[in-house]
Image: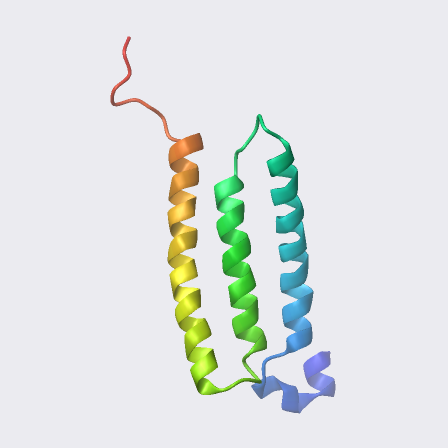
Length: 109
């Protein structure tokens, strides 16, 4: 409906859509992180959530800078996003390695 009422917005980044989709994810991720820090027994998904929060925050910044900011700033944020995506993938691996892998290779019977 938004694009029907504002057809010129079709070629620009829609900041309202970015905020509506990213902000709830960031808030939920932050609250989940705070809850997991308080719980000293169960630390599952804390690495995944940390990577998700940082990567989503940077991606949101990229999308918001789509209509504003200079080319150099956009390229810097894009390079930072690539690095943070790699960090996110590493944290997913660490999460799997610490919490979900099975020790079948060196198990003693």
